[in-house]
Structure formats: structure tokens, C-alpha cells
Length: 216
Image (cartoon, rainbow, N blue to C red; front, side, top):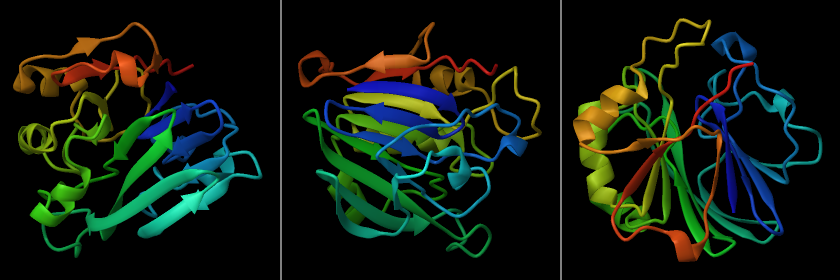
């Protein structure tokens, strides 16, 4: 499976038989998001920087609700959580998406997780192969708390998202990925916006890879 990062919380996951885009964002975020061709698009919540479906070419199946979904051969489970630490009263709800059957790799996209995971949700997503987690804070869990949640989940690979980059022209009060890496105590910044993952090359201990976002 190939993973391509488009910035913020948007990725394109391309397997042998299916492609999935996650959380496309409005250009007002400050990044240049090209038109993306995908079979499926997931939307973690209905905020402008996560639900810009106009960036996805027509024909993609949209998954934007919690519950069990079986779409184009992929099992997708959505778990509703809060976007903030006040029961969702400040920023509403968020959906964590767990996906299986993509070239034998299990994936979890946390969206804009704003509170620590309940034990019930944790049991459903822990020890996933690839975890996409927001690490910039402010709108989500702060990096210090997110580091604790990542250790609880214990993924094979963590790919940070929703962090500040120097090239953005937006005004999001979030921290850069370096801040999270320093807190966690490890991590590798890749000189690429792509990463290829197979069941055979998954690390035994959590590997953290920051994909380079080329904001053109």
C-alpha cells in the first residue's frame, strides 16, 4: 500500500484494488490541494478543513458517519468521539475511522481527536498497523496527551498529521511535528511525501515517520 500526504489530515491510501482519501480540506487552510482521484473518501467531521469533497473527483463513495461500513471491498468502522474535552460542546463530534483489508494492512485515522480514548474505543483500535494521529494540538489533544494516547494504542507505525508547516499561508495555531517528536523521544522525518508499507516491512516497535508535505 502506498501512502501519499497532501497536508493537514489528508492522505491518499492506494492499494492494489482500492484507493482511499481522508479528510480533504478547503484551500482557505493555506495549502494547495489538487484534485484527487479515489474510490472512497472518509470525512472525520464536518469542518471546512476536513470535509472539502470538491477536491475529490466524482465517483468516490463518501463515508462520513459512525458505524460499520463495507465499501468496495474495504471494511471501515467509524467510532464517534468528541472533538474537544467538554463533551463535544465546543467543537462537536469526531469520527475515528478504522480500516481493514487494504493489502493486508490495518489502518486507523483519528481525525481531530479532542479527548483521551475511552477503554472501549481503545480496545477496538489498539495495536493497529498504521495510525494517523493529529499532533499539533489546540484543536485536538495537546501533543503531550497525544503522545500518551499513541503509547496506549501501540501502533506499528505512527504517521503524524494536523501539524504546522513553514510554508502554510494559513493562520492555524498548531505546533510543528518537531515538537511532538521531541516529546515522544524518537521519530524520523522523511524527505518524501510518500511511504510504501507492506505487512512484511512493518517494524516490531512503533516507528514514527513524518511525511514531507510539499505545498506547491
